Amino acid sequence: MKKLFAFFAICLFSLPTALPQEKADRILGVYSVIELDTKEESKVKIFKGEDGKYYGQVIWLKKPNFPDGTPKRDIKNPDPKLRNTPGDKILLMKGFSYDPAKEEWKGGTIYDPVHGKTYSCYLKFESDTKLKVRGYIGIPALGKSMYWNKLQ
Image 1: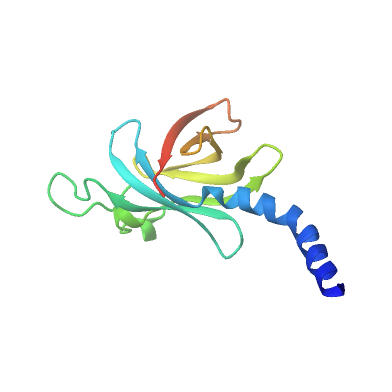
Image 2: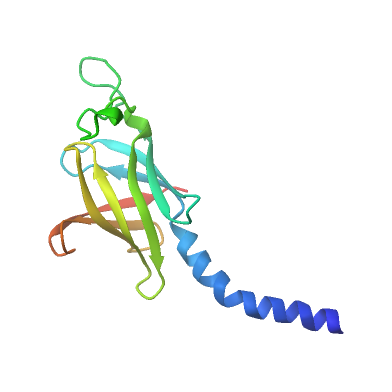
């Protein structure tokens, strides 16, 4: 009987922490992305870093080469050391934390490799598979949204 009570007590006390973590990890997966300006198609994988924050990296490009046939690289990156990063390995998103009160991921940044700029950003699901990605300068009202479709 004592073992059964201990089991239920452990389950009861771990439930409040398990549910927010499960909601936070809902963002993990692969997304189909269509860039607003260029209409280029890619896939981005969102993963959890060792620090417990969420990150996103390009893992696939529909057109992996420039028009001259050379592989795409992160040529507009302001950091010269990163300009040789292959297009399908660019780290786009950094340092997001889940806010259970707003059911969104915030506090991170998103990098735009087309223009070589980094913006503040928040992420929020609009539906089970539609992720709103809002990049901005200063306040969210001064920004632009994209919608990514979760594939897996």
